Image 1 (cartoon, rainbow, N blue to C red):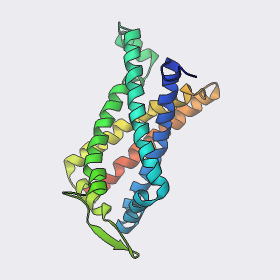
Image 2 (cartoon, rainbow, N blue to C red):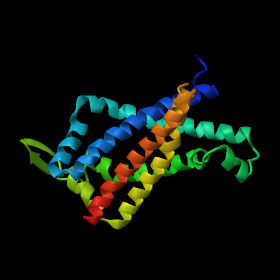
Image 3 (cartoon, helix red, strand yellow):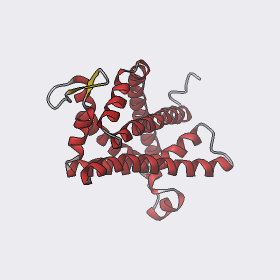
Image 4 (cartoon, rainbow, N blue to C red):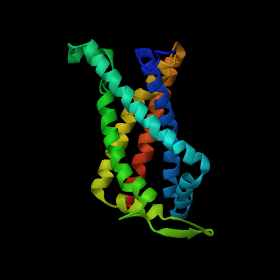
Length: 223
């Protein structure tokens, strides 16, 4: 147990658990975002709940730690794999033995991280700390809250930002399509029939997440 943080299998386990934690967060985050399609009040209430609920406030730093842990261990494992196989396989052999997503998980993850940083700068920091471009307050059912809806919609009316957002959603989906199954494999839940089941579930989950996040900005850009 003492070597779990340094052993390769321990690193994979930690990365997988942190990845599954983020998988749950993405589903919650998408659910909240879909309230935008209902209307301004519905989304503002949902967004206010996410920033004012005590449980969410506790989960917020844990989520940040989960992201950092996942990135660190992904980087370590990628470097280990590169050192273990200094001579790259031919493109044909690589294509036959693994999917494109599995061979490019680190690149996909780094690209998704870039998208997340842009997202945090444009939305989270402005909502959390105010300053230039921060959302105004609105009164809904007697409760003062940020007009997060107007802040987000304003960005989604900019075509190039929508392109960036949709591209990020697609890359996230590709990352998840392999990462979902791989996480369960690392914790020993992909043996026998579960290997196929989890692979299918992972692909469906990736499509739902990528499609859900992509359709929202597209809706506001077109309608």
